[in-house]
Amino acid sequence: MTTKTVSDTKSAVIEHRDQLIASFARGEKPKDRWRIGTEHEKFVYKTEDHRAPSYDEAGGIRDLLMALTEFGWQPVMEGGNVIAMSGADGSISLEPAGQFELSGAPLDNLHQTCAETGRHLEQVLKVGEQLGIGFLGLGMWPDKTRAELPIMPKGRYAIMLRHMPRVGSMGLDMMLRTCTIQVNLDYSSEADMVKKFRVGLALQPLATALFANSPFTEAQPNGMLSYRSHIWSDTDPARTGMLPFVFEDDFGYERYADYALDVPMYFVYRDGKYIDAAGLSFRDFLRGELSVLPGELPTIDDWNDHLSTAFPEVRLKSFLEMRGADGGPWNRICALPALWVGLLYDQGALDAAWDLVKGWDMAAREALRSSVPRLALDAPLPGGGTLRDIAGEVLDIAHAGLAARARVDAGGSNETGFLDPLREIVRSGKVPAQTLLDRYHGAWGGDVSRVYDEMRF
Image (cartoon, rainbow, N blue to C red; front, top):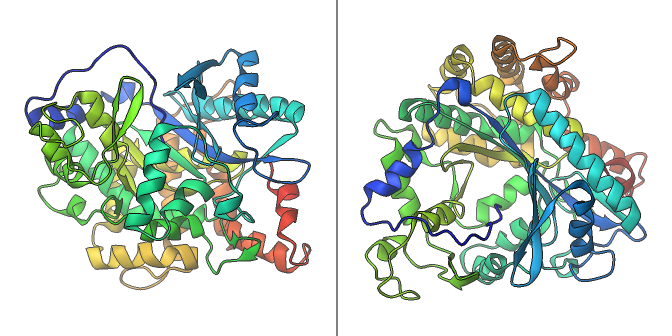
């Protein structure tokens, strides 16, 4: 989830619908200006007893944030509380129960992306050691109940926590108990956006499978390989899912704007405070008829905030967000952008990836998405076979795309090596969650707490 940076500058008032559509067109960039933005979350725990620290306690989340000023990070405040940090490497923000997120800067290549990840992890590990705090790379808390988790003092989260139980059974789990890795990518035109969106949405189940890393709930196997992905199946149907209209002939900026307008609102941000608008209509807001702000029209900032409250598997803002992966260790943080950059940033790779999936119908795509949380690479493909049968081919396409980009580091290596962790998963036949379950049933002797030793950063 994106942290709002408080600003005294007011954006333009939205006076007509075309301004909503234009917000997507403004994201268009020529290929030489395409960038990579990587976001990754991790669980924070006290090393002495594995509990999740509160915001206010000594050595807790607030102290963790403020300790990062040592590295040049600057506090972002809300209601007198520091709720994020801003710096050269992007922003550090808090998820609802204190999950720690780096939203990285837009970078030119994967070497820079992985270096940024390394700097961040080195910094948080240093301050964590001083505070008795550790960091865990998983897709879901392996042992915590909802009641055991703290709540961060952010206004939008208070609204969402009240609203989630009204619309689904697992929205609170999504907010409090999950972590993800996400990649943000550019497009050059509406047609380019459409093709990237379609490929990203069709192959998002493969990313979910390769990164599946959440097999435990409350210290027991939960029957899933990506329980984080399963949670989205009953979080809020009005703002999640596979978006069938993306594969229809008339899909483009306007269709996505219409979809977003039909997503119920959460809030409006005014004068440093979040106003509860949960369940209300942005269409009413456009007419000046929003009940909590009667007579007031939305601004472009309001629209951008609203776009951040839709949670499909791929999301459009002024860039595309790939949202299907569980949280995980350092090398998989670098591997996810490698997968999507390889597939989407080279035209030959993008065309090859689309050729692979364009024959799938929507029912088959939905069935694949539904089966992946439990089956991962064994999920059945449209037309026969399983995801395992195309995983290697997709990685080959991504490899070719990265090789064609020819972005090399100081030693002359290109970006293809960042795919190696995914190659190993396909070679071994086991996704990360299956490896964890093997350890649980074997060397761990059924003791999930061992995960803190083996999956910490």
